[in-house]
View 1 (tube, rainbow, N blue to C red):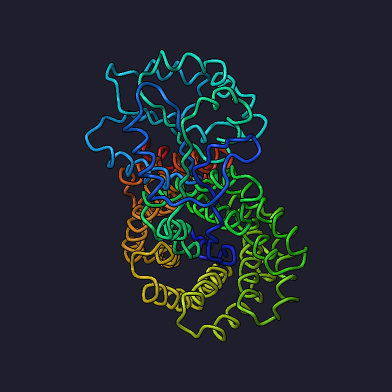
View 2 (view 1 turned 45 degrees about the vertical axis):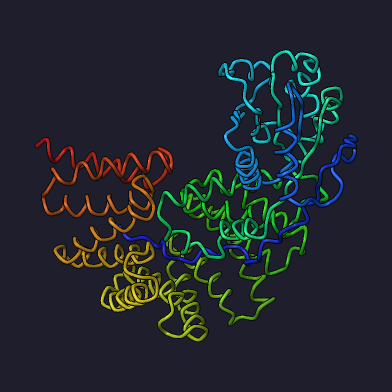
Length: 509
């Protein structure tokens, strides 16, 4: 029933997100090689586009260039405000289409708008040569003479610069009928929002966010990453890309989307090795993060050499008493614990605890991690009397430093409840298990593996106090969550299935 889930998983070295230079301006000399040239002034661009739309009669074509969706949404809102009560129809093309003209006809509402705003193609349109040869771009060129008959109002295509470049290359005849190009860039406030969404925090801080906020943030992060990756090579900032990749990986890890997080972590490791060489501390960070995911997904034989390599790198680069070395020691010891090599694990845990107490003091949340893990090891070597005060100390540190509703507190609550369970103090253990379950449901949502572990532990306690009617639905929930998130062959899933079978057999007697 116990879990070593409080071990430290370190995120990337935290860097501020570079804003990047976003050059662009109204430029009617749309050449395939350089459709945009000089820096824009958004206020004047917005006013100029609104003025052009007010003056337009019948069909005309405009391009509005934005390399960030937040910039686009703000610009659309500002242009619509300047048009007053004039009707603007918006067409969000979020799914692949072959022919934009056909889609515009299908969605015609029978009212001639002041303008038709179309956006969203960057979410699915391929990049580079592939985009230029796509049916969407090819059909823009082939239908160029049909637009004036089909649409009696201006068409504004809101696109990132790389999409404009693809259209310029692949549909030059369509582009030739344009009436203007307008470009918009992010404000300082919007760049700050990007920094905020990639929060300067570790996994513990991410875990403490409400479940719905985690989902919202990772969706935004994915959009930002796609937008950045779609930029021309000369406009991509490696630090921005690295930060977005790490933040996406962090959120997916916490959300138990390990299949999505793993390729991001492998990509980050490759980037670090290419940039810094194989023995740099940044490589140690990336090795550690990937190893933690492999450990979480029960691939311990793959994780161990990565953890050992990360430890060697940091001991050589930072010295044997550095706090990062304590993280490496603690994580390796936890893996050794999981593979029942307790005699190897214990000295590493004690060394990690000593380093952290020297570096942070005795009441820092970082100290609670080796305290908790050492206590679990002592439990597994039947030294429960030694383990309990360490676990209670870890709980007190976590509650004081992180607050009583933090997921890390729930982990220690669960572990202390397990110790009480093992010493036959079931009445003391039950309220701790219920409190841990409430914390994790609020933090992770009701279908997260952490919640399944809580449910399984509580169901087992209820089973042992002969409350089978209460135990069964909790174990069924746990089994369903483990099966969905970890797979049918994962040890947690198999254990839950076996426990449920035992409950059902006893109920049938």
